[in-house]
Length: 404
Image (cartoon, rainbow, N blue to C red; front, side):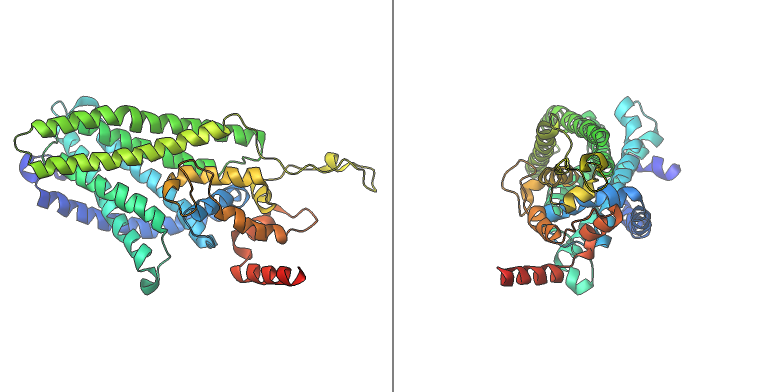
């Protein structure tokens, strides 16, 4: 209690003290990350929603980032990491709420310290994640780590984490009473928590069913509203007001003012990508129906029962394995709001989500392996989650070329 309250004291809010606390917190987040995420991933991998619904969009997301042959472990790890991000943002955001509601001057010393501690927790996590992503992106072979998508590193490692660090620490050090900073930090943390949490929930939906697809629409609209309010309505006027205050501050150097403008500009670009992505998904799918399996001719079998009467609804995983175009397109767009960064995807051709191509080309190999009989959900989920190896696909392609 006293430690947290003392953080808010002006004599303790030096850059050296703040970065020291953030460094210790980064070690703590590192330990939590390496112990919690594997356990969460192990639990997720055993759940029915994972094999039936979530694995397809999760694979699509990694394909959007250029990883075409992700293993089951990579898919589960990414899903668990997304859950972890949502919990982390919520944890930090809650600590910022008292000062955001009552203001710096009207808050107790403990609430002020809690605000600083919440921001430093976010900074500490960003420091850990920045180093971890950097090693996995550029030195994963030497260190024996799982590779990290370069596109995702560009977005998080350049457009997000450094900006968060460069703006949070000076806010605590010099402008702890800045009302605009309180509102921006709190709104963005909660918006991030809601966004990534809903993205994880969206992956678990059976979007091949009318009810599941309706829930998907509600989630997409909710994400659009939250992202638009926090990043397009709240952020611009608050950021402009903060820049004006820094400009009028005689103690602020020209270099600090220029750096502040640069950070705000990059965050504005990040916000634009997020809002554009969310709006594109809503406009594209709000008035469309759920993906459906291909129609079967209504011809009676030997038992006298028409196939249409015996037909059961296909799950999302089955539709993806069957190469259903609507399901593939939906999986790509569902993945876009988890990454929300298709602008930087190697397969992206424009700002609009759903324009990527790796998942389409890779799923053709699944189509070539399709059986004439209806496969079970478990076997189909296994077929698109790693059972079809790249070597098998190459052998099939070579055999197909010989036959032609």
